[in-house]
Image (tube, rainbow, N blue to C red; front, side, top):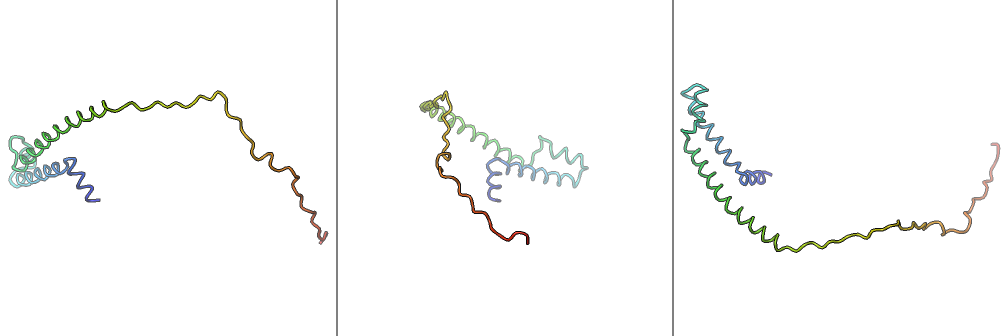
Length: 127
């Protein structure tokens, strides 16, 4: 289960988000030691003053965006070629029945002798 979660985080870019949150927390903790809460938040999220980890995350995001754009274009071109080369599926229609088939009664003609009736029960009356 943990392996699946880790693979999903790697594939979706979630690890970069976790690294960015870690960088912001580290920056905020450093600024909060010498500034008020509002000033520390303003300095943490100031785009003009990124830390080294924020810059590294930004570079990785840009590199992954550049690498994912190229294969998508070639994959789309290959899909188009496959779709053009595919033949049409055969058209199969069911026959139109104008009347319902006659129902057969399979059990009506099998037994011709009368159903046996059990003999009357003899017994003591009035006990």
